[in-house]
Image 1 (cartoon, helix red, strand yellow):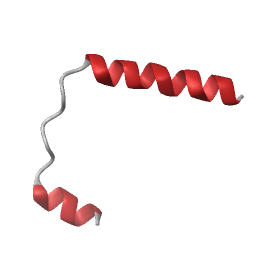
Image 2 (cartoon, helix red, strand yellow; image 1 turned 90 degrees about the vertical axis):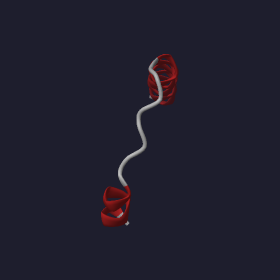
Image 3 (tube, rainbow, N blue to C red; image 1 turned 90 degrees about the horizontal axis):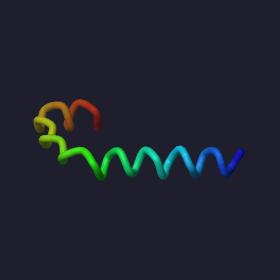
Image 4 (cartoon, rainbow, N blue to C red; image 1 turned 120 degrees about the vertical axis):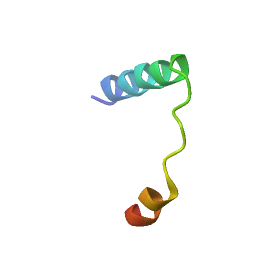
Length: 34
C-alpha cells in the first residue's frame, strides 16, 4: 500500500512539474481560507 501511495505521489509531482506554474490566488481567497 505504501508503495502505491508513493508511486501516486511521484506521478502527481511529475505532472505538476510538467505543467506551467499556476497563477497566485487572490489575497482575499487566502484570507478566507485562513
